[in-house]
Length: 232
Image 1 (cartoon, one colour):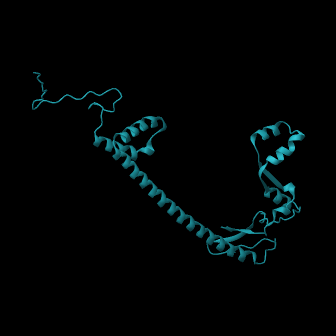
Image 2 (cartoon, one colour):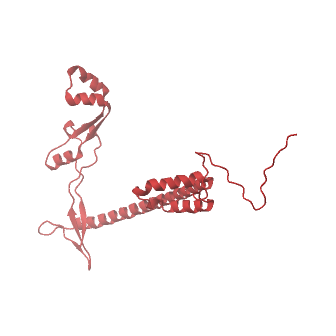
């Protein structure tokens, strides 16, 4: 009659640890991190992520991967942190938008008030030398300085002569390489047909130079003479 043998572990005796096969994710107690230490380490990694130097980034990434692969709680922790970052970005954008609107408001107010002062100065009779007389207070003196000529908006660019325009074109690189060498006559039509999205722009700087030099450019004109407020 066959007999069976039972292997018993008596009280107070520790059962042997199961062997870990090669490639298994198990770690010995000397190398494995506890759940609590993983949480603490991830918190530290997230809080110091901005302080990681380029030479330390590879080591940082190894520890980051290890903490995230160890438990789902780390993934959730990082997700919560990213949501917090998104909320801070949204708040900063809102604040920046409000500050931008406030800045534009104050700039517009400043421009309008300076315009009123300049209008007052230029409305007065000039002095014997033909200069605008300053507007003087007890502690502040306002003057007016003529601004450099500026080009007015062009209502119809089709009226501007071609010598004041640039053409920007997009074409395949292979055809561009051919153009760098030589354009045979039989490929001119092909190149012309391949040109995409032509854009014609006016060289405003050249137009202004021509007009201020006494010339005339069809469809273009300078802005009316204006003055800048000088405070002293």
